[in-house]
Image 1: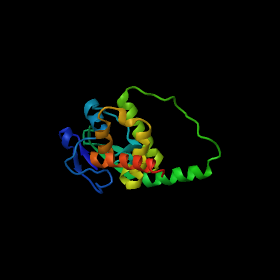
Image 2 (image 1 turned 90 degrees about the vertical axis):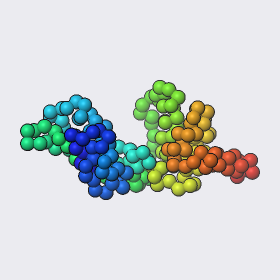
Image 3 (image 1 turned 135 degrees about the horizontal axis):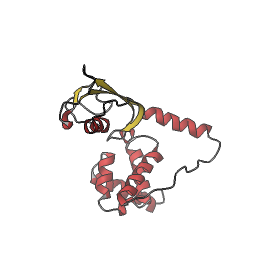
Length: 190
């Protein structure tokens, strides 16, 4: 996709191919990289190559952003290339499980800044548990993720139901039916 830096930040995308990868279209707004350049007006920015981004629907993209200069040498546009690596990351995780010889070590201390960060962390853990991004999850996968969230107290956080339902692309009614069906199965001894 191409971002025109002379446009309003809400509408910088002027050209795009395969918009289904990023979920974006011509006329959509700026990304973080674009906003950063519009704000800083860096005269010699370095291209950002091969970094990971996450779409609102949970796909993981390998992204690169290159700065395009006009005849005066000023950055006038940014070319962004995105490749969906969600399925490749699932394969990588599966292979790592097969070849791993030891227990995984926690590399960073757990950081809990506020309750919303805790909820975000629990949601990320539920996606990791399922092993695929939300965009590729079926009903059983979502039930498994929501079961994890319920068991770990996610729904004790105020308004968490709204956030979890939005994140998994389901209604609150469906969310609560997934929670209730889990409890029904537990009571029946399943």
